[in-house]
Amino acid sequence: MLVHRASDFEKKARDALKKIQKVEGLGVFYANFLGKKSELNDFLKSLKDLPAEEKRDIAPVIQKIRTELQNDFDAKQAFLRKKELDERLASDWLDVTKEFPIKKGSIHPISRVQRRVEEIFTSMGFEIADGPEVETEWRNFDALNVPSSHPARDMQDTFWVSSRSQDPHENTVLRTHTSSVQIRKMMEYGAPVRIIVPGRVYRNEAVDASHDATFYQVEGLLVDKGISLAHLKGTIQAMLSELFEKEVLVRFRPGYFPFVEPGLEVDFSCLLCNGKGCRVCKHSGWVEFMGAGMVHPNVLRNGGIDPEVYSGFAFGFGLTRLVMMQYGIDDIRLLFSQKKSFLSQF
Ligand code: DAH
Image (tube, rainbow, N blue to C red; front, side):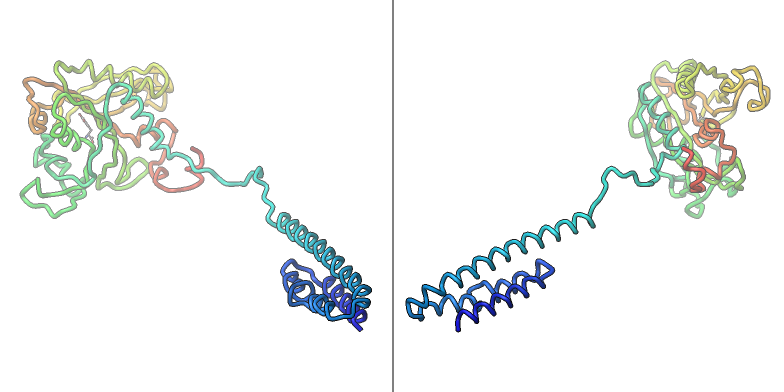
């Protein structure tokens, strides 16, 4: 009897529906129990072969089964979809406001001071220039009026990149100072020129707390008409006062560097005692800062500039030493150590 078969079917369908735990299972259920190829559809199709009376009785029963099953199916589908969504939301949940213990990096103290120095010189009209760390012997020494017999050229102080031939234009060294860039830029720009050159330099030295085989310098070069030592003093005094955020005095002492005439040693007034004398300045009131002077006529000529028309000042200071002074770092090796405990202080 069709009615019995229908009610068996209904029971089977309900049991099957009850067992479904996942949205995935719904497709197969639908195909088996409600779709075009389902047994239910067969019932509906077979109705038309029944005698009219029987059909009248049984059709509503089957329709009712179909409607109810469809409703239950819809309800189950909605329930399972919501349940799965809730589960996903719960497991994928992310608190975007939560603070993670990520340690931020920081700017290395050398870069920090370098940037500040660059800002100050730029504000005074200097340009930032750059040059290669592997330089010809000629630009590093000869063009700067350093005699070929000068002890700085010998094996102790200079890292020679090429083996040393007769021709200083052929020979290459790791630049021992940023002064080598003076020649490059004079040739490139001509006069007037107003540059600073921050950069890495190399010396073949024994490493200890205050010496490293590599360190940073800042070179300065200003060439124009009518330039004197007064311009140099004013420039350096203004730069240091800006950098240290207090009035700093500058003192010149005679010094010798082959590329300048006259050559000078430049000191600034001790920041700690303001010139009164303390342990840091060895009770002199002054701190040694850099070498400087008026650019030697030979150097101007080597850079393609006429010393009869132009004059200029040049200076070179140790950026690494300046950083150590500013932050009270007593061992140069810390700066390149990559020690987190050291670096995280900045
Ligand atoms: N190049 C020198 C050094 O490394 C520093 C220096 C001295 C640079 C005098 C200059 C200068 O431009 O005029 O020790």
